[in-house]
Image (cartoon, rainbow, N blue to C red; front, side):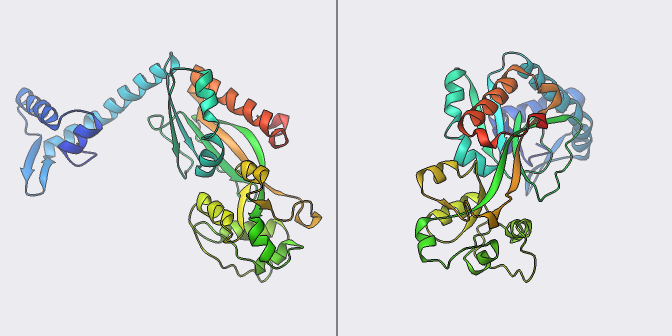
Length: 300
C-alpha cells in the first residue's frame, strides 16, 4: 500500500480482494494497538506509525520474497522471465521461441520488450538480452551479474526496393546525407554510424524521428526512407527481399560498424537449469541459422 498509494492498488497486485487487505490491516492495528491508516478526502493514507512500520519491515519482506523466488528458480521452477531489447524480441526471438517451448513442455515464458538501463531486479526478470554498438562504450555490469556475447551483428543501412528505385544514387556513405534518413529518438545513431564510415564533416542530419527501432524498420518497409538496423534483426526481411542492404558488396561501406548481443543473468542463477537451457538454446539457434554472426571463440 505504501508503495502503490492505496489499498485497492495493493490488493490488485496481491491478487486479493481489497476488503481482505483492509481486514488484515485492521487486525494488525487491533493486535498492536497502533493506528496504521487514516481516511482522508484523498483516500486512505498511512499514519506516521504506519510509515515507520513500513520502512522497518519492507527490506525484510523484500528479502523473504527474493530468497523464496531464488529457491524456486534453483529447483524445478517452470517460469522464465525474459527481458529483451524490442527489435530483437519482435523480429527474431518471438518467431522462434516457440521451438524452445516445444522442447521444454510445461514452461511459463514471459517475454517483455524493454529499452534498458544496466540494472535489473531479480524480481523482474531472469534473463536480459541487450545490444551494444561498437561505437558506444559498454557500461560495466553490476558485480552480481554475468554476461556472454551471443552474436556479433554488423549494423547496416536498409531500405525498400521501391525507395531505392526512386532515390539518388548511393555510391559512398556520404551520399546518405542526401537521402531520407529514419531516426529513433534523436540523430545520434546515424551520426555515430556515419562517423564510423568516415563521414565527419558538415553533417547536418534531418528526417523523421520515430522513437523506436521497430517503427523505423516498418517505415523503411513502406518506402519512407533508410533505417539503421543489424544483420540479426533484419535477417528475415533481407532474405525475403522486403528490405535491401544499402551499400552491400560496396568496399566504401566497409568495414562494418558492429554491435554485440549480450545475454545477461544474475551470477548466482547463471547455471540454474532453466536459465542454462535457454542460454544454450539461444546460442545454438543463432549458430545454426546465422553462423557468420557468431562471436569469436574467446568472447564468452
